[in-house]
Every structure is written in structure tokens, then in C-alpha cells.
Length: 186
Image (spheres, rainbow, N blue to C red):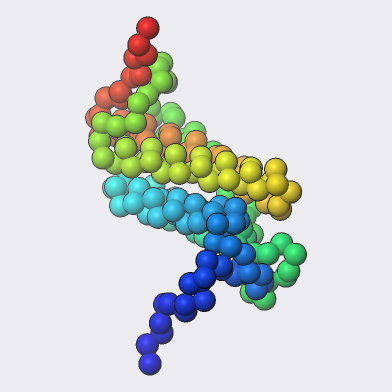
């Protein structure tokens, strides 16, 4: 017999955290790990727009870390999960920093604010960056509501949004796409 994806247990607007605690589907914890899932999907789309094998490998690592983050956010912090959730490590943040440093060596310094666009791959990276920033805001909101969020999660998400910005600039540079300067109306 084939496994069915639908369970019908959420039909009344509730879902279970890892650990069994039932919460409304509108709960900030659900919103936060759902946004991590959305970000992970966008990172997959970004990966599809990248030709460089090394960058693809880094983005696959990012997707793995996002799954780790989503899993940790999906746990009820009051209950020990039966399955082992992998840990995020400081070295995961350092990887993003090293990758940004390498890309920044190859692109001209910023002299103006840039508008997202110019090529579908660049635009997609900026959309992923925006979703990443929303994810960060939700994690901070959880903290402000006294819900536990591992501080390294916020640090990683913050650094990831920076990485996606630099990746967008780097990709545009590789493709020979001119950055679109923001020219404010005065």
C-alpha cells in the first residue's frame, strides 16, 4: 500500500510540534518554520539558476542547514524530541563569511544602492534574500515573545541574507549584467 501524504489531522486548523504539542497553524512558531521552508524552496530555485559547481555545493549546504533550523524551530522547547535534531555550528556561519569574502574580491565595490533586477537569476536571489530577512524578523519576534530560538539561528539567517545579496551581485557580474543603481527622486 502506498503511503498517503494527507493525514486529515490539521483540518481543524491545528498542527503538532515535534514533541506532540498541538498549536494553531497561525502560531508564530509555525509561521517561522514555514518561512524557513519557503526560504529553503527559494534557495533551491537560486541553485537552479547557478552554473558554478562550487556555488551549487555551497547552496546545497545552505539548504541542509535550513532544514536543520526548520527542525529546531518545529520542536516544542519544553519537550525533548524522540529523534535527534542536528545542530547548527559556528562553522556554518564562517562558511558563508568565507564565501562572501571570495566573491567580494571578484566584484567592484558598491558605490550606490542597487535595485534588484537585470536578470532572472539575480532577481531570484534578491527574492530569496527578502524571504531570508522576513525569516530573521520572525525569529527575533519569537525571542521578543520569550520563545526560545537558538541565538546561532538568528546569526546564521542574518549572515545568509548577506550571502544572498553578495551572490546576486557576483552572479550579475559573472553574467556581465550591469547593476541597476537606485536613483532617488529629489
